[in-house]
Image (cartoon, rainbow, N blue to C red):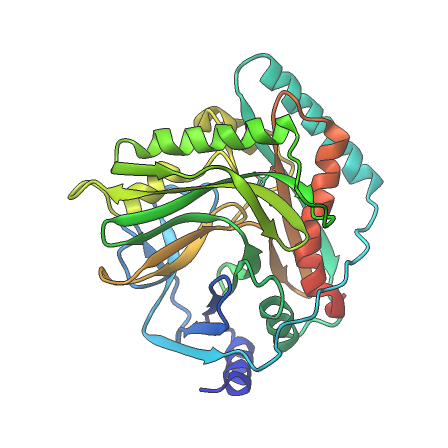
Length: 355
Ligand SMILES: C=C(O[C@H]1C=CC=C(C(=O)O)[C@@H]1O)C(=O)O
């Protein structure tokens, strides 16, 4: 099917409130779509169903999925990519800023008491969308952020979620798997070489160590790359690639996902203490933000699970954008606020014509 026809079909499907998911892989110009023709909410425990899974941050072995039955794809039109999207002025929110900074300070004190080494805090902000339109959303989202995995998920039971995420949770093909440690953030101001402050280097190193440790039980060969700079829209992160083989008979997508999620890039270390702190102290429910999502295929094809970052929920003419950042003993609260403001840009640029 060609792109305009497919977009029109999504629009029609959405007007009937039927589930669908659209996605595209980084650097690829194919739009993949799965339509579901009824409103059943499918769940999977084993991540073995073929389709597209969607799991919350507080994942307890149950993920939602849309089965792969009605799969379509289309190439993006020529010159589809938006020229560099223009920044949207991030609204000033004095009260929210004060509250977030207080929470960051409380978290730093908690870390100082040596109960945790790193805790990833987050917040969300709502925007009115007087000009919301599904076709505009598709064009805006898939025409920008070429380096990200982009998706729009809709199910009447979960509402609409969409995002452009830089972070792979796990990619697995037969016994070979790939994951990454992504942490540390700065704005891309075009300066080369990129200099990373020690706080960001330490924070990212911690993520790499925690991921390799948690994978040891289920993998046999692990290769860990050097940390390098990864571009994500107007932001830069530090990234380490981790590749290996899963132990035959021991590890499946489920065991690897369970070993990794939630990674210290979205939760913290030690994982349980960080998660309890987040659930107790954050002012909003994360829902699917920092959960995971992606296409799961049969054994001989690649399955990809991404971490749900740089994302938003769309409901009743409003969008709620979710953003966060890792807090360590060296964090400065005001800078952590700025970092979340910068991260908000990825979705604000997508929303720009609809605001
Ligand atoms: C939690 C988020 O980003 C994570 C991924 C990359 C860098 C991060 C950081 O520098 O704190 C976060 O760990 C988010 O975008 O909401």
